[in-house]
Length: 491
Image 1 (cartoon, helix red, strand yellow):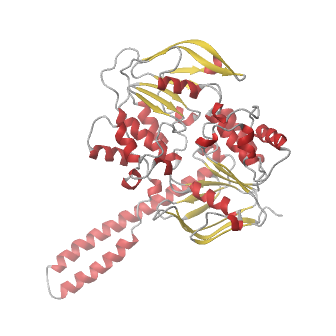
Image 2 (cartoon, rainbow, N blue to C red; image 1 turned 120 degrees about the horizontal axis):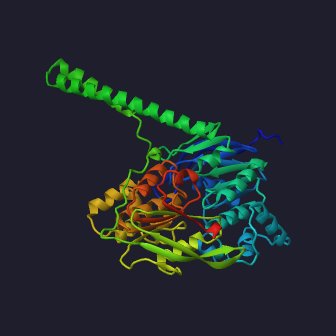
C-alpha cells in the first residue's frame, strides 16, 4: 500500500484521566503510513496517555481504555508496540528472557532467536538469563526498545527513548529510525535527536487539551510555535490596554447620571466581549522560575575524597585507583559509556557504601537519582517536599513548589501518579529545600521539558557546594561550570 495512506486517525477524541482531569478535548489529527512524528507538550500534559490510547485502540473490542467521546481509528490488522520510559519496579527482578517473552500472550517457540535479533538491533550484548536490575540506566533503555521491536509492530511508539543513552547509543538509535520503514511516533525532549528524523509535530496543549499538527523540520516547528505565542501575547497587550481605557471611560460616564449611565452600561457590555477575546497564558509554555540552590553553611576543607572506584569492563568489575578531592564550589563530571559503573558509584557515594571514599558525617547530600527510587511513590507531593524542608514557613514551601510548576492540585497528588518529568521537578524542589553541601546528580535532564534545561543549568553552575554530575547531553553540559572530569573509560 502507498505510504500516503492514513493508518491512524483521532476523530474529535475527548478523554479524562480520573475525575476532572481532562487530557484531550476533541483531538483531531491523522498519521500516515511510514511517517516519523514527534509528540510535544509540557510535562504532565498527557503525551504518554495518548500513546496508551493508541495501543488500546489497536486491541479493538478488547481495549480497556477508551475515549469518553469521539473515536480512534486504526487500520484493521495493524499492530502497535510502545517502548516505555522506564522498566517498572516489579519487572527489575526478571531476566531478559522473562521480560521479553512476557510481551507475547501466546508461546513463541523461536523466542531465543527473536531475543537475539532484538538485542542486536539495539546494540546490546547480554546473556538471556541476566537480571534486569544488573543493567545500567542506558542499558535498560535499550531493553525497553528491544521489548517493543521484538513485536515487529506496524506502529512504533517511543516514549523518551534517549533517556540514559550515551552518545553511541543515541547515534545507533538515530540510524535505526532513519532506516525504519514503518510508522513511528516519538516523545522526546532531545531536540537534536528529533530534528534528525522527524517530519512533523503533534503538539498537545496542556491548557486547551487540543492537539495541533505541524509539518516540517522540528526546529522550524518550534520557532513557528514561539511566533504564534508571541502574536497571542501582543494581542493580549492591545486588548488589555483597550479594556482598561474603556473601563475608565465607563466609570466617568456612570457618575454623570441620566443618559450617560446608558452609555456606561453599553460600554461595560463591550468590555465583557473584549475580555472574552483575551487569550489565557498557555500553561504548557511556562518555564520553571529561575532558582538558586542554597549551600549548607559552615562547610570547609574537602567535602569529598575518593581513592578508588569500581569499573565494569567486559562484564567484570575491577577496582581502579584514583586521586580525587572536591571542595566547596568544585564541580566534577563523571563520564563513560553505558554500563561502566557510573550510576553504581553515585549510589554508593550517596549512601556511604563506596570503597575508598570519605565524606564528613555533617555533610548533607542532595541526591538526584535517574529512576526516582529515592521518592516514595505512595506519598503526596506535599508530604515528600515537607519532609525534606529543614527550616522555613508553609508559605515558603508552597512558593518554592510553585516555582517548579507544582501547584496546589499537584501538591495533593501522589508521586506515583505524576509524569516522569513532574517527578524530576519534585526532586529539584527537595534539593532546594534541603540546602545540601554535596550534590550528586544522575542524568538530571531525563524527562525534563527542554524549556526548563537552561534554568536548571544556570542553578547548577551557581551552586557553591561540591557537585558530581552524570549526563550524556552535550548541550546541557556546555552550559554548566565543570572543574574536573573523571572518565571511567580511561582507568
